[in-house]
Amino acid sequence: MRIDENILAQARAADVLAFLEQHNGFTFAHRGGEYRCKQHPSLAIKDDRRSWYWHSKGVGGYGVLDYLTKVENVPFRQAVDMAVTNGYTAVVVHEPPMQKPIAPPPKQLILPEKAGIPLRLLDYLCNKRGIDSEVVSRFIDFDMLFEDRRKNVVFVGKDEDNKPRFASLRGTQGDGAFRGDCSGSDKRYGFHMLAVMPSPWLYIFESPIDLMSHASLNKAETGAWENVSRLSLSGTSDTAMPFFLNRHKFIKELVFCLDNDTAGREAAVAMARKYADKGYVTRLELPRGKDFNEDLQVFRAQTKAQNRTKTQHNDVTI
Image (cartoon, rainbow, N blue to C red):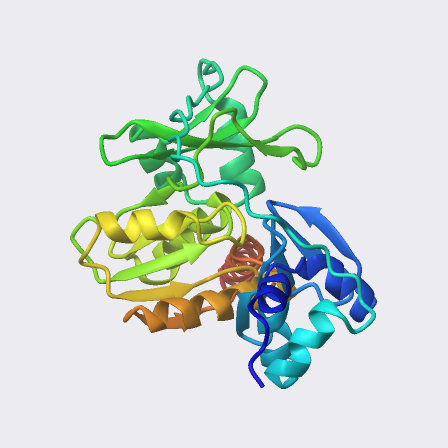
């Protein structure tokens, strides 16, 4: 028997978040433009409350019917009944009348005022974080890194016209825990470094500090650090990737170097699958520790200990 079109429309318009709260007993927290399930952190529902993706399962869709058929393997007709009449009150989202879309005004990035000599920046990045001074200087020279008057480190992402479009802050005082984005930041333009010569490889990180740490490790271990491009996502969303890849068509292989924790691993796997479907060669290169800055600091400590041992050995020999 054919399903009534009105009933089918109501089932398709059902609020996924409300349905899962009642049907599965899930609870959700809103952050970063989406709802994350507290019981299953890799299950995310977008702000429209109908688009969803379960990262650890590698499955997503639109609406309650997709969820029931794809995740719970419920037959379609039964899924319609559950979404509408099976004792679960699904909130129907009524579509607003069609209107001509109005383009939002472009974001106006407001950068903080620069400090004079970036002494705090150099101490924090080079001494405390162990990042190579040549790597730091490269970004300073390209005006993508500076210290503001409040002694924060400012990481800048630029567009194709070399205009700043995104900036994130990192505190240097105390434990350096303060972090945030400057007003008007557009995350489509991530903090990045291009290879000196066009390279097919792009390495992707969660933070600018991890990006620079990876470059520092490459420089220390092989001497080569400007032979690949690197991009910071400023989180685990791939918002910055489509714009970067569209501007650099020569990139063919994506290496995901996100944090070695649950959120980082799940995001890396999901993005690797997504971009493999788009035709890119993808792979994961996770840090040994939590992130690449932790790996860099371990490397620095080991190198320092080895040099100390050699010095002591030479003193004894003499």
